[in-house]
Structures are given as C-alpha cells and as structure tokens.
Image 1 (tube, one colour):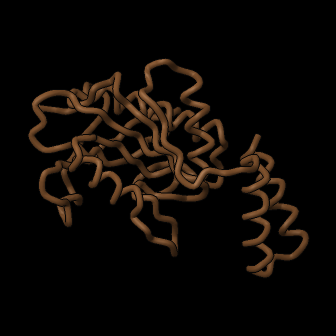
Image 2: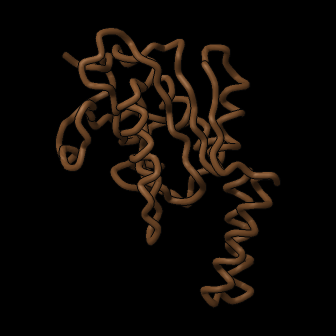
Length: 205
C-alpha cells in the first residue's frame, strides 16, 4: 500500500543501489507553488508503528537531495538519512528547485520560495502513514540552519530542530560574501559583478 495519501506520488526506479540493510527508500514528488519537487523518503524496514522523522533543509546554492552541489559531493544528507533510519527514524530529503529531478530554476528561487518548499515538504512528510506526525524534526544545514528556525517559529507541532554548520552572521551578508568571492575568482568584470549583485537583491528579498 502507498505510504502517502492521494496527491503525492511514489516510485521505485533508480534508488535501489547501495541502500543499507534494514531500511526502505521510495522516490516521492510533491507540488510547491506549481513546481514539482522530487525527493527520497527513507524509512526503517518493518516498523510496526509510526516512527519519528526528519526533513532535511538545504544549504545555499543548487543543492540536491543528498546534500551535493556541482563539484562537491559529500552525500551528507544521504548518509545521515541512512544512519537515522537504521536508528528507527524516517526522513525526507529533496532536490532544491532547478536541481536534480526537481522542476524550476535555481537562480530564480527567492528565500520565500525555499521556505515554502520546506513547509510543504514537512507537510508531505507528516502525511506519511509510517511517520508519527507529532514527532517530526527539521535538520537545517548552513542556510537551512537559518530557514529551519523560521519554520519552527510558525508552528507548534514540531518536536525540535537540529542545526548543522549554522551561521553567526546574517544570511544575506554570508551569501553576498560567498557569491562575490566566487565571481571575482572566476574573472567577472565589474559590470558583471554589479549584475549578480542585483540578482542577489531579488533572491534575498
């Protein structure tokens, strides 16, 4: 039987390799403001009752469901999901807009878009029949460590949040500095730099 209610689709293609014993994985899709986002639901195999669960909230940039960005593959979310499932905790991780199997354009995504995606992802996770909807957590990594507390402040049905590599400065200052450094190292002209700054203003608004 389906792990999710009507409106959230599942599949089994392409996720069978290198899955540790004792866990099950299924591909999921959910709709966020007209954009279809794709992810992976990981659950303990053979659980006899609903289990606690976590939603992973990404770092900045075009990050996939496993926590990877082009040129930097750590599989941090995938490894955490597997370890958590072996400890009896389910999880949902998904590709950000315009990344992996998700629709949309990464560079056009605003902070509000990313917050909306995470909110809907959390609702999708809570709707899973194998998940205890009153024992759900957020795990925010880097930028996600800023978004997760915002979401948590809006609701009273979260069991808690975990922040990994959190920031001591404001998010907009960090993103501007990171992007500026990368763009300068790539040899962008001053005119090009100004264009990217204007794009950042739109993203951070």
